[in-house]
Length: 91
Image (cartoon, rainbow, N blue to C red):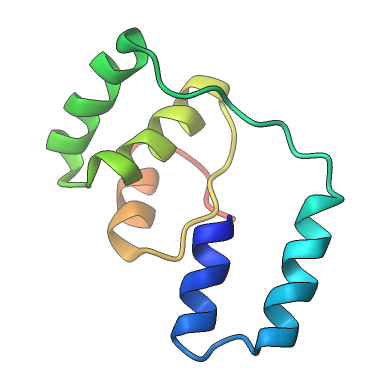
């Protein structure tokens, strides 16, 4: 999430004030942090990356959505297309 906010700021989509406010809101959401990918999970990520022509970074998000059976928030069109093809709801 932080990376998406920083990217939006760098591209001029968020002001410095909006970036601070969004980061503050995120800090208070009580989000559950998924542990770093283990070898077993990485074995699933690489085939997903190859199948859908995604970066390993994006494939890890798709793998998590598949494993947890959760919708995916994705602004990236390639990731959104892959999520749809995998039957994952996009928010």
